[in-house]
Length: 125
Image (cartoon, rainbow, N blue to C red):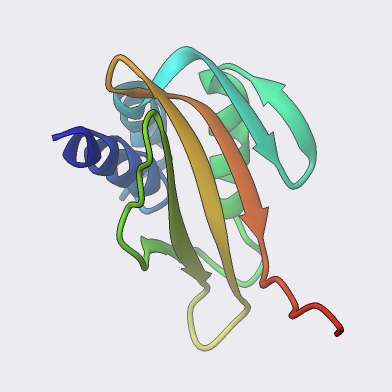
């Protein structure tokens, strides 16, 4: 049940990247995130849905064209934290970015997002 709730919030969050129009982004984020969400993204720490919305809109306006964000793994949820992998692909074989997000849930909504973009290289032995 807990993983299903997390999966629903995560998939709603991801759907904001793929909304048919920018005007739907805020509503989708509001269904997935707490109003005081803490977002640790590639550019540092920010707080609130408006900050996450700016990030999502920036991704949606990628110079290579509007891309598609998909969750490409199961949701792994030990306790109140969950992680999943995602892929963002731009049209016509443009740039592709993959990563892992770690999220914390509070009352069925995401209150923290930590974005790990890119692949982790194997350690040198």
